[in-house]
Image (cartoon, rainbow, N blue to C red; front, top):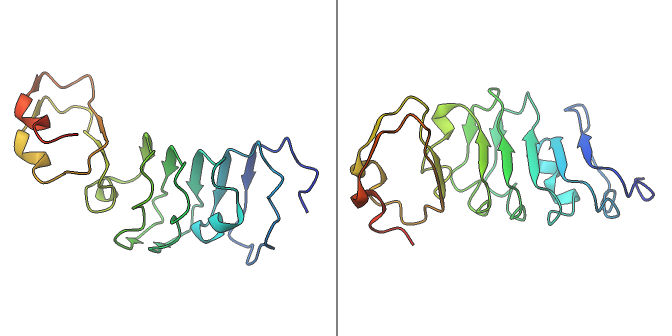
Length: 155
């Protein structure tokens, strides 16, 4: 279908789509931004996708939907998501930008990235106790005190 769409960079697939044929996006080497249900990720060449926007209306993110999506750097989770199965984002180790409700921005769902809320002034070293897989820590300009102990076990 998109055999000759080599310049396609963005695609948004509405919730009304129920099925995608295998190989549909194989030739879309410039495709970097995808907006759709996570269940369709398997139909894209995931080494090219850097931004994934979960379609508004998706309610559950299942454990294996992001299994091969190792190269995603930007992830947007809409407010419609009510449940994320534990381990759903385990392979997303390159995420550097995460947009989601605060309830999802934690070590249970993203054990390798943490955004400290803007407005935070002091970071308590105990907050990251046991976070051995932490890869990205985003500290806002509002932070005025940062304890060295905080990164004692970081690789």
